[in-house]
Length: 224
Image 1 (cartoon, rainbow, N blue to C red):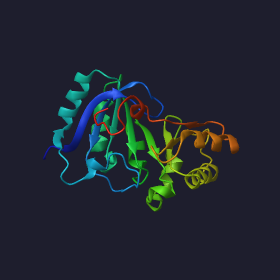
Image 2: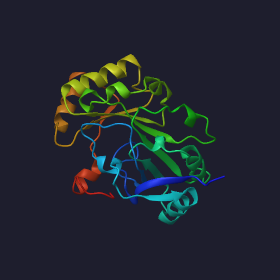
Image 3: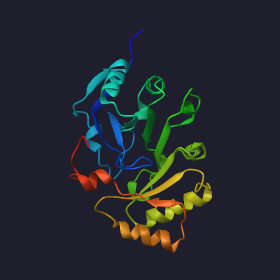
Image 4: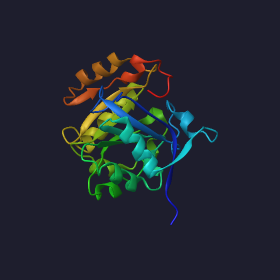
């Protein structure tokens, strides 16, 4: 049987810029390719046909993670769950009880297969709001699968986006079930506008999330 390989565009150690473990060190593996084209995508370069990448085996990725010496592992993209053999890779990483795996996923790929793994990763899942242009691609059944260790992220660039996020939160009763974040599209909406909306709607247990890596480094810088 041919050994599975994974097309990786970059791997690096930095801080988690967002999510439950924001500010903590993490080993990032970014996989090539995505099935969506969001209007505000900040990693569209990773989806371009000519983007440089390397094909790595499971063992090569595991070896790099061990050498990194960091407990938090973030698998991102692109859309990592499109990659063949992802379940096998996740299980292999989590064989080390000290490791924690977070999957950054765009909300369009079924999460069910990952709920049957021996040890489950955590998910940071987007719900693509109207301004993204990709809302129609959302797999709504995924919302029911999110739990206390997961995060639901609404990337917003307008009041319309925030109103839609509120509609989804209320319809699926998600606040209190999973962590919920509103994250501003860099350069399109001011964080204070999100704070004002949260106060207006009295949205308890919903957090404003600022992408720390874009504050610390140049917003266009890669490998951070």
